Length: 298
Image (tube, rainbow, N blue to C red; front, side, top):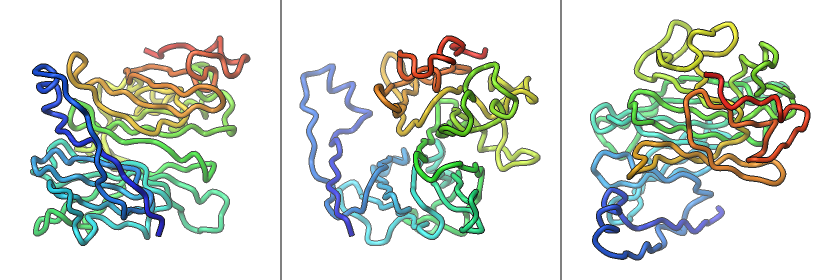
């Protein structure tokens, strides 16, 4: 097993602003664990227990208690479903409803077919009897998206301050759809969920899917032109996001992996077009489409 050193910031985020006002503070780091296998996610459930949930790429989530001790039994083990764990998010009311969500890449059946690559958004609940273990029997598939390639399966899931809406950031379709992020592209490209920022209501179940559509999504009134889940588009391969506090409290910022020269950090905005594949960062990537890329479809 590959052992990876995981470093974490050891301060309470909710107290940081207060500490900074009082005096200059040192933000220090210490080793949490050296016995993890490719850890790539660390989350706090926001339930007041101070537990840290650490997700490994293979599909295992461990709990570290407030003293930094790892629980003997993993919180979640879905290695039978997962090719690569990509995201973990806890419902804002997790302390009451025990709901949490994982986003991962997987393989659809049959395994030998050419179109068996998918990413999935899945819901589970923590066990009612033991909050340190997930109830895998509670699993519910919310969304499955076909992927054209086995690599670059990135993305993120995060709850905004609008509570019941989960922002679901899906990787781009690479070379298959050349101009899918241009506002006047074909219907097929505009209806693709790849390369988009999706916003769905996980407290409702729609007629044809396991989620509802927020009524204020920007494309709700254009169902024949765009999928109503789309909140923004023109992203390439968003990997991690975070919510800002302080002056811009609740604002979501995301890092988007570049292709050749530039990486970018995007502020999540309703109806925004972040430019890929016409633009990479602030520069043109594809000169044929760069000037045709609009900033917004609002």
